[in-house]
Image (tube, rainbow, N blue to C red; front, top):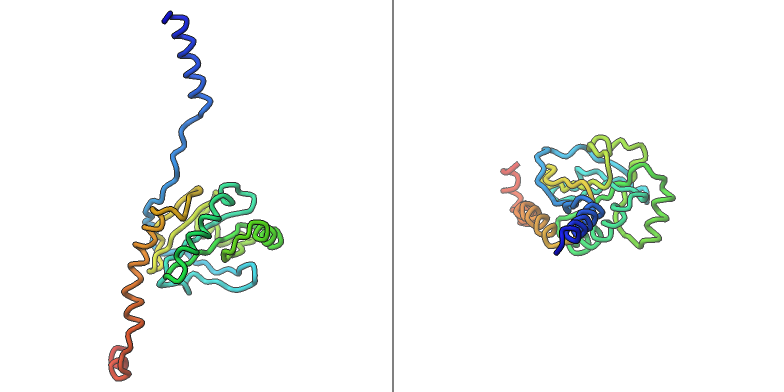
Length: 193
């Protein structure tokens, strides 16, 4: 091949690589050593109160999102599928909408058919307490109330990898559940107190 043809081919390859842009690594769940979860007490779109402390003993996926956030909208169906997949197990999802009017969020839910507990953070108080600065951000809280994982960006939450991580955390909750289901004679129970 002549030098001119090689140079032309080289130029095309460089241009093609430049147009593709930098390779974006897919976000992955990474363990988080942040300790105990900050407080989270908000009302959902139906006005019901939710307090993270009431979910103790369960693994809780907390997703901060907004309707205008395209990656948020893309990942929400997979969050719903994960919730359905783990129904009846010690697992919960709390989707925290950041600073949007109730009507807009309800309209979005109606249009998409999503059926997730959507908590409203109209003044971004909880969002700030959790250190969320971009969307989406998702935390996985273990049954002990500690933040175990954090992810900035969107993800297929119904993947086998994520389900395995959550199953491992739910396994930590099971011994406690089994003990709670054991019937103890009242006299023994009184001695244990």
